[in-house]
Amino acid sequence: MEDPSDRVTARTSVTPVPDDEQPTTGSSPDGIVPPPGPAVLSRSDLRRERTKKTRARWYVLGVVVALLLGVGVAALVTHSDKTAAKAPVITATTAAPAPLATCPLTGTPAPGGTVPNRPALAVKIGNYSGDRPSTGLNQADVVFEEPVEGSYTRLVAVFHCQGAPLVGDLRSAREPDVAILSQLSDPLFVHAGGITPVLGLLAAGPLQDENVLAAASAVVTHPSGRYAPYSTFTSTAAVWALHPAEVTPPSPLFSYAATLPAGSVVGSGQSVHIPFSSDADVTWTWDPSSARYLRSYSGTPDKLLDGSQTATANVIVLTVATFLGPWVENSQGAHEVEVTAVGSGPLVVLRGGVAITGTWSRTSLTRPATLATAGGQPITLQPGNTWEELVPQGIPVTTTAAPTAAPATTVPGSTGQHPATTRP
Image 1 (cartoon, helix red, strand yellow):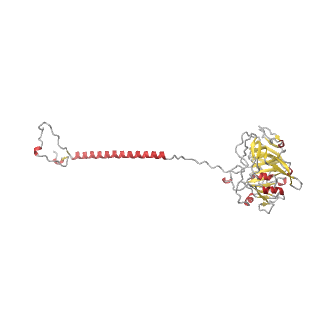
Image 2: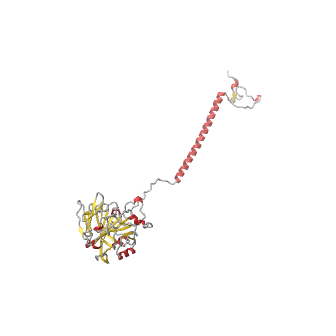
Image 3: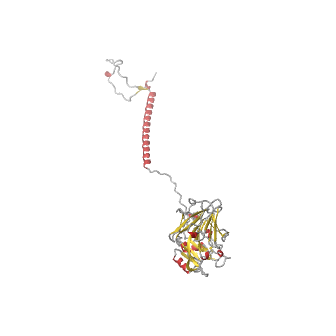
C-alpha cells in the first residue's frame, strides 16, 4: 500500500474552497463531469519530468548556439571573400638575369664580370725580320697591320680587357697610326719616337701620346739577348699606372655574334694570303682544333717570344688607297706611306673557317669602319681577338677554301673589285 507521504501536489499552494462550493462526488447536477484536479506526481515521475525539461533547455540552447555560430561563420566567409576580391593578385615572378658584361673590343665576357675602367692602350710594334719574335700579340684585343716604306709593315697592338707583362719591340710611329688611334676613344699610345711631322699629327690627334724616347721612361724594359734598335719593350700595367685618372673604356669597333652570318659557306675561308713584300709575305690558316687562324711568313709559322704561334679569332682584310707623302722617313730617302682611311673599299672577313666578302666604309676618323656584305647586310665577327690588315690597292688578296668547298679565286685589289673571293 502506497504511503500518502510519497505523493505531493503538482502546485506548491492551493486556494481553499468553501465547503458549500465543494463539488459532490460523482456527476454534476447537469450531468457534466468536472475536470480532474491537479495531477499528483511521484518523486520518480518528477525527476523524469525535470530531466526532460533540462534536456529540452539544453537542446534549445544548442540550437541557438549552432545558429549563432553559423551566422558568424557565414559573416566571416563573406568578409574574407570581399577582402580577397579587393586585395591585389600577387604572382611569383623570376627576375630576368642581368646581361653579361662584355669586353668592347672582343665581344667576350669581361674578366670577373666587370669591364675594366681604363682606356685602350695601343703599342707600336716593329715587323722587320729583325724585330721578330714579337711578344704580347696574342694578349691584344685588336692588332692592326699597316703598310710602311719599302713595302714593309708595322703593327699597332691594342689592349684593354687583357694586358701583357711584356710587349714589343717598340718602334717609331707612322702617319697611318693617327687614323687607327682616332677611333679608339682617346687611347694611350706608346711608341719609340717618329719623324717631326708624324709627332705633330699625334700631338693634334684624339689620343694621349706616350713617346718613350721623349724622356727617361719608367715603362721601358730591355730584355737580355735583344739589341738596339730591337731591344725596347714595355708592360701594359706600367703604362696604365701612369694614367690612374683615365677610367673610360673604349667604344666597340665591331659587332659580334656566335653564329655565322646568313649565307656563309662552310669551309670557304680555310686561309688568306697577303703578299705585302718578301719580308712580310703573310698567310693566315684556319686551325679547327684551336678554332683560330694561325699566322705564317712565307710558309714559316710566326712564333712569338714565348714559343706560341700568333693566332686570332678573326681576320679582316681592308683594301685601301695609299700614296707616298712628302715626308722623308729614313736615311735612305724613303718617303712616308700614307693611307686614305676615310671612304670605302673592298673587304673580306675570315671567321670560323668562312670567308665573307663585302665592302668597308668609313665616314670619319673618329668612327670605325662599317663592314657589310655585297647585299648590304652587316658582317659580324666571332667573339675574340681580331687582326685588321690594311692592304694597299694592287696587292692581291687570295682566300683558299677547304678541300670540300669550291676552289678559291684571286682578284687584284687594284682593279677596284673585291679581293680574293671564294664562291659557293
